[in-house]
Length: 87
Image 1 (tube, one colour):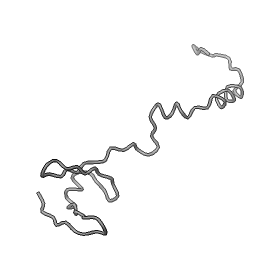
Image 2 (tube, one colour; image 1 turned 90 degrees about the vertical axis):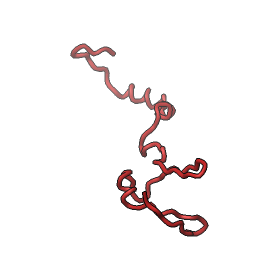
Image 3 (tube, one colour; image 1 turned 180 degrees about the vertical axis):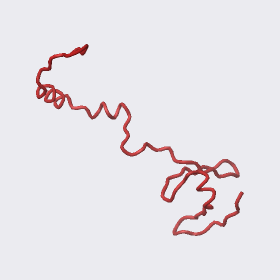
């Protein structure tokens, strides 16, 4: 447990998180956290966010351009199967 003081920071009130707690949680400066209230308590947990560069299957499928697929298929010469491939 740590006791900290609330400070004024512009139009917000800031709470300084002790470094040993941030280290224990694996948090670094600039990381987003989710802050919630529950009665007399405040909880802080990692924000659930989609990692950069990651897309859902639905997002990937939306990005498919059927014209590009047809152009790609047309640009690839007919290949002769050499094993158990099936086209």
